[in-house]
Length: 224
Length: 371
Image 1 (cartoon, rainbow over the protein chains, first blue to last red):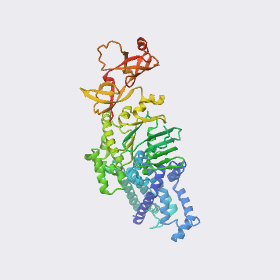
Image 2: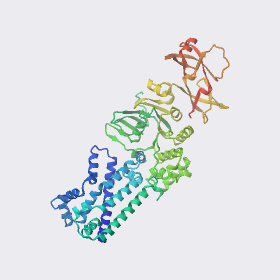
Image 3: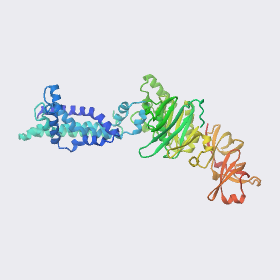
Image 4: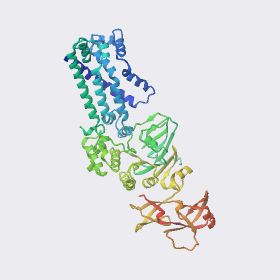
């Protein structure tokens, strides 16, 4: 088995999930509570990776990150190497590709919190950010967990975007799904089967754990 | 209202409108003259805008027109675009559905608004509220395990925790079953009096309004109709909408003189009325009498034996035909309405100014304690 690729995939998935959580919470909050007329535009953009072929997304990302784009030039100036075919480029692509898997569960969970609870908190002197931390976040824990698990699993399993943006550089951009593809291409079925089985098992365990937790969605605090 | 320039500004004055995008406009126009204990009841049928008026006070709705001043400070001024957010208004708000935080214990719900206090001070305040509202044995329970009445007390305690200068109660008893409502009305008013807080209370229940309120603000279809002392509004509704909302009953305030064998004697002006004792009567009560329960006879008529316990001598002030019925406005030491058939009216030859006796059964007199 290609342990290097497995480690890289786990690291990429962890960083992607953490970045998405930081980016996703404010964005999902805005989507759940804003009354702007053009909100639907943002919703559509966020959901795009769900329907777009990974190669299309990868192609545009490659163009946007290239040395002729402002983003690519800025990155190269700062870090001394190009963004495509690097781990950083892969991380950026993964964040965009998994965006809807984080945003949608979060926004749905935030919007489901009873407006009256939020207003009760305001009337008790708590600001909007504080109300989020003390009321909305604890009551949305199931949605947050779903977002985290889906983002992590989706990043672990991504293939097309990684291939387009990251290439296949061992230790830098070769993820576990690419490794399996490589092994199959090389008729190396033994390691491919073992790696695939490992991914299958991990996915199954993570989802089982998530759904088991969610069964207690009504009283999550009773489990702590 | 007289523009008396020497009069001090009222404790609270709201003259504001909320215009909803759908076209509905809600007016809120009333004042609370003094700080300290008083209960102002926003009263009207459902959909009349009572809750919106309350939310304007809490800052949960933004006034599109007009102003709100409390204790010399402007909380809202549409022209200047001024809107003090709910966090900075010193109000205790009890929402209709209570909205207790389901993930927090009773004690944590009470402590929620006290984050800025020192831990020892916060604990002391929570203990004080638990004791005041008799919630101490329940302090570690989640709100979902409480009965409706217990939840109501937690919500009230949470609203009181920060010692607000104004208390806003949205239908505080409507989520409870009927027997609890009747029991809690008196408890709630006693509690509010002890707290010495100005309170604005929304209700659509007339008995609740009479029993809990001092001042009445009548609203109908988003329109502010009348505001004043509760007795004054019931006596002299300014327009037909108010009269319709308040109903046909005669409502007068009286002093409870004695209670014997379940029958209370209540003095209303010079008249004495016998009525069934509803329990928990104090010194004062509102006497409610429906027009159809009041019979009228000529005073000269021989006093026959009757089961009716009340015979009140007076005269007819006015007659007004209403279909097959005639509404008689009587003066029996207090204004009393009677609804009789047109036929009966003709048989007796009743006319304005005639001396008559009003007859009513003790069981038809409805007493609402009001201390």
